Image 1 (cartoon, rainbow, N blue to C red):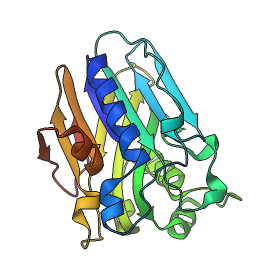
Image 2: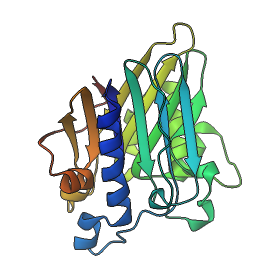
Image 3: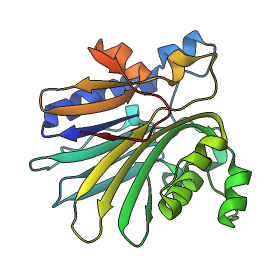
Image 4: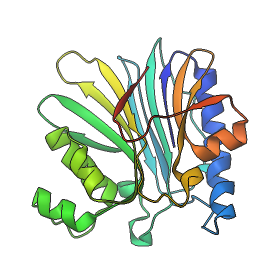
Length: 227
């Protein structure tokens, strides 16, 4: 997954191409003996103040293509390719980024990792017939604005990309967090920052590998603003 804030569609297309290759073959996962294919859906949210594009598909990202985004000026973007633990949730309904609303914002969230669904359901008093941990994490965040409890119930990683759009002003901000408790595979969970031609991105580790990009480490365990 990756998030981008800037003005360059070329930056966006480059990052998208790296995500496609990462989803087709996650070389870090393969090296660790994990499933290297992220084929269980994909999606994105792009916002430029005038247009809001939100797309989610059940298909692998490498079987579809990115439509030319008609953006103007500065824009915010979140992209995610999914590997589902529960294959019953392979559907556009459960692809990322999820969308939730509250009194002040529209909130989009993409997540890599695993958090405790049962504890989130108890906290939210919300027990749908089918859901995902990422959807529950967004519901909790949109309701509280807090990630500390999400950190407490993290089973592996709480790597987050969050796009918030103000109901009142239309202004946006993009937030991210790199947090994990599985200390035995940091190369799998680490995220990185990259300065493009016209903006800045935060990305999962496999994108760095495919792009051979000059990146810098992300500060761990803090919800930070991108751009």
